Image 1 (cartoon, rainbow, N blue to C red):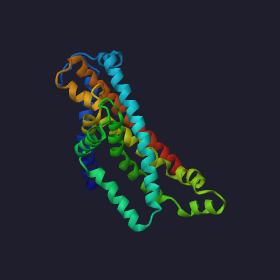
Image 2: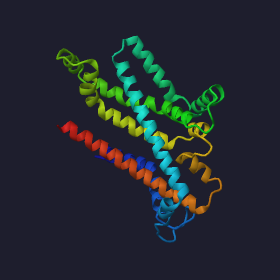
Image 3: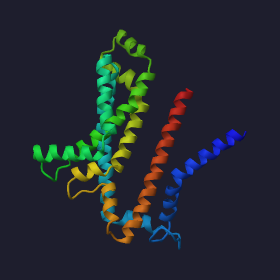
Image 4: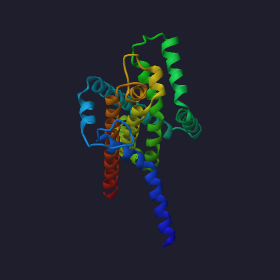
Length: 263
């Protein structure tokens, strides 16, 4: 009994450590306070500013479009890479796993500098193009999609694919009808992780984005250096909304996975 109580207490402390700062930020987003420390009155002014300021609306819309494009590309590349590695010989599989791990542990600043030098200096692309930004973020997100799909491939019954081929399916049709449906939860998880990474990344976005474009991360960093107080507090509301969306998405994915397991 005492052991279980200590375990629950430790778990509670960890959860409090993780979520208390976010909850405090969420509370302040519903106030008219201009700084953390004192709550005067509750208000929806921050959310009004967030959705009525053209600059903020354009920044959020542009970042969401970028996140969806990057996540779609990363999901395709990461899924194909995982399937290719899974059905490769052992030596090639190990080499692919190793190459996939390097971008995961590599510093984002290295990727940002590398893509910037390659695209703008060597290939001499225009500085107002979005291609370096998309390529840089896709190279960041693709390995995480790979890591999400590989466990689903290992859980899959390999005889199902072989049976589909024996029954007359082509390899492409068997891929679409047999493999993809079984690994779809891993693909969705990788897609959601790619969206989060794109919204969160700062270094790659800073070094590869056009000068006229800001992602949420670069805008927030620049806003804290001298923007109007009204804009700063509106970003509290933006952070709260992002957190709520992430919680809802994770909850939906977990409930969907449980319902599939129940079947």
